[in-house]
Length: 282
Image (cartoon, rainbow, N blue to C red):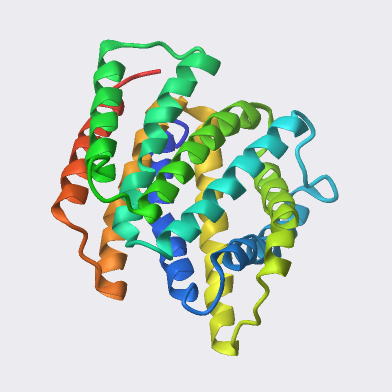
């Protein structure tokens, strides 16, 4: 088939979402010896080591976007904030639980796409968003014990939704490699103060893990930026749900985690809403 077909960009986004929990798993493993704030910086510093030389090879000295710099700054701030909050969340709760709570992102992204990108509201979108909200409430259990990690993960999801929308706006006139190069370098710079504040020296055997975290992260973001450049935000947003599949596997195999029934029921309701959204043509 045509690699530029709508289905091809959905596949790129799907792959990106399936591999990103590998980064989260590495971050959770490293959080036993390092602050999540330091790990957040290390993720982007190590990504710079991989992305910047590739960007220079591809574009020479002009490795950053030439248009909409304000939007690129804004999307990077949203992403850095979402990632840092999520890393703190997974140091406090299980991977699958955090990812499930984080799933509020596509609901908010679909709403924001209608407000700022003028994407149409349909009955299908309305039903999907209602299911997403109900699923989030089941996971949050507002009448019961409030898990701080779950609340942080939901906050991270809201910030990621803002990142999705600004990425869609910023990537329309920007090459994906330039977008990623700016994101990595600017992200590492704005996270430097929190890294200095929580500084710790990695052991020699941890260095490959930090580098792997940056490499997998860079690949995932390159795929998702490319997808957002060519496909509608409300179509791509529900593919974030695929994170739950690999997050659950990693959580179970590496950390022996088994979330309770409410997490699975809530996630199932949200995923059902997501599957409805994937049937919408923008």
